[in-house]
Structure formats: C-alpha cells, structure tokens
Length: 177
Image (cartoon, rainbow, N blue to C red; front, top):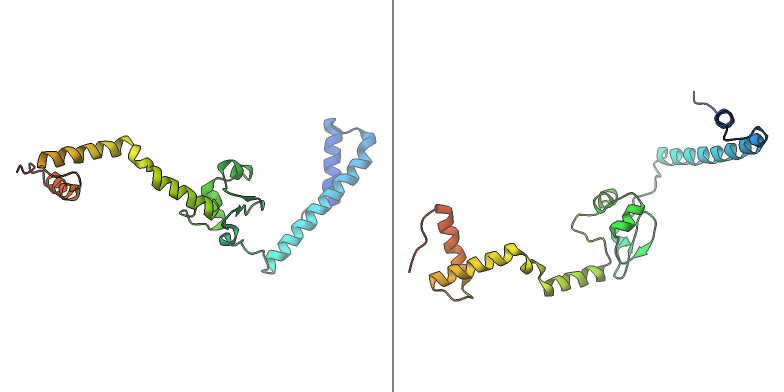
C-alpha cells in the first residue's frame, strides 16, 4: 500500500530539517504548505485516472483546425503564430519530427500558416535555388557539351538525355553523326 499524503509530507519536512535546509521553527508552515501541494497533486492525478478509466480522455486535437490561412496554433501551448519554428518547439522540448508524430501530422504538411507556405512556394519557384547548386550546374554543362557534340540545339536536350542514358547503361560508345 502506498504511503498517505500526510506520511509523505512528514518525511519530506524531516529530511529538510536533517539536511539543514529548514529551521525547526519553520517546520509547521512547511508542513502546511507541502501537505496542501501534495493533496492538490493527488487530486489531479486521481481525476486524470478516473477520466482515462471512464474512457472520456480528452480527444487528440485535430491538427487540421490548428492551421488557418494566416496563423497556425501550437497544439502544445495554444500560441497563434505564422510558423512553428524550431525555437518555439524547443520550448516544449520537441522538434518538428516529434511534434508531427505526437499530433499525427503528416511529414509533408508545413508547420506554418497556409499563406506563409504559399508565399514560400512561390518564392522558391521564382528563385529556383536548385539551379544554383554545383551538381545542377555541372549537369547542365554536361548536357550542353553532349548536345553540342551531337550537333543538337539547346532546346533539344530530351533526345540527348535518352541517348546518354542508353549508352551509359550499356557501356557502348556514343554514336557519332
């Protein structure tokens, strides 16, 4: 059988007195305060247990309702933001992956307001950051060189790609026109 709240309170106060962190004359006030706090905690715990035993546990918040056009509501604290940043999620000891897992949010769903996500998509389409990567540039140079070698125009790269693919897989030399 688990010890009562009163026994736990007594043991805590005695331990504080023995450790020298509590003066014996402050014992009575400490007993009252600790006893009250422990009773509050116990009643909360019992309420949670009775709710889960009765099957009336609070439903998992619907994440779809938390994302609106101009804001996203943090399902942990209820804050309304344009984007759930890593900094905000760290306040709750979470990262984007664990937040999504906890609330059943798909990995492909941005943790930002719809307008913010649309703006980011539009900017990415205009800026085309993938075209600035060294790998992409090297591939473009290779395509252009192959097209020039085969005597094709710049816009006719699909035919060149098929030709390159065919000969690179077989290991045969490239045809020369």
